[in-house]
Length: 159
Image (cartoon, rainbow, N blue to C red; front, side, top):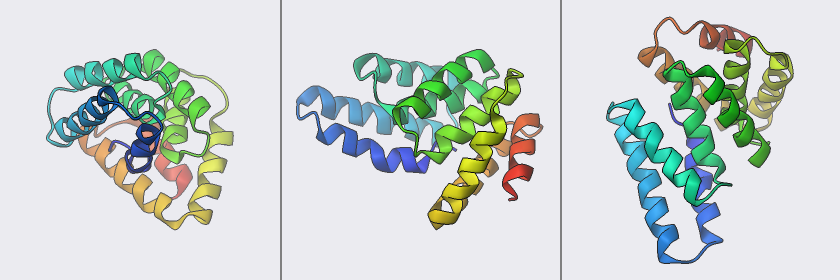
């Protein structure tokens, strides 16, 4: 599932930029999320998030969504780059960290354990995090049932 935390925090980013272009980008972001939830073509939705990022390069929620979509499409190197950028922009986003963990696993890179441990700590400190990540895992496995990296991360996060 595309990250709820990112969706909640995304409008805060837009408040900093008060112009019509920003309102259009917010609408585009929400429209892309709606298309994802409706099960539309992931490749087209990836393009939507890439356009948003071109307009607002520090839009961490768009980077987080893009990394998730790239993982679902098995574009692991692209997912890794997007997830790294999402975490750089917002180190407090557990979905971005989960995406980075998945991408690191998928590309046989190191550093997964550190992110998993941070996610566990976030889940303890913020009770909603665990339920939102559970929903994300459920969504991911419904779209990619035999997702080996997500199955591992799910067991490590103990849900």
